[in-house]
Length: 332
Image (cartoon, rainbow, N blue to C red):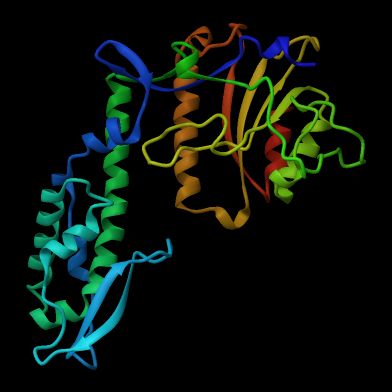
């Protein structure tokens, strides 16, 4: 039904100029590698309050936790006459490698941290609070590395080494001609039980949508200006690489038409969020989408990969408590 209309439809992505050749931006290769770790400021750790342990004659083993919610885990191994762990800078540095990939800088960071805290606390106190110190240090490093990564990203954009556009089909995203459906999938229908009419594909797996996303899909189906909508699949479909490692996979891509029903004249990329998910991650996605919108407006639309040169594109994050109002504004 919509095959011809998406034949030349390619969504823009962030690309970087690599010795005269444009390619998709890589977080590790292009962002992380350019972070200046010497700009990390550890002085906030001076405000940490460390407590004395009831039993200082306990040696603890510390390992990386399998639980993503915990940075590290600890367990009692044995008691020693001297008490506590050895203040092992190399050990602490190893715990920082997943944040600071350079082992030498990780070691220097651990050294600086101990030096700062030793102004206020003695060696045994540092030893007996080592788990807490590592956790707080990693939290602070993650916050600051995020800001430094954003600065790298912004600087590359300002220098026009990093652009949001389509150079060729390898540096843009084309909507699929077909999708794989599991044998036990349940077809999503309209709210009245009738088959979907405006979805890019007739079969949308119901189990792939949560309640909020299902409601949005039903809403899009009933909009008079809707040309087609597509449920973007995480880890499979269109993604935006920002200054964090994890890519952003928006929930919906949809198009509208004000003139006739043979083509679209506007494109929207939408991420839906539950009200309980208004957090730093959501703020990050809003910032990246704002940048996408700004860069899209600055370029000739034909550079963004659309056959129809007057086709604007907008990126939006909408929350479950306001999505209908926001989409009403978009589609008004």
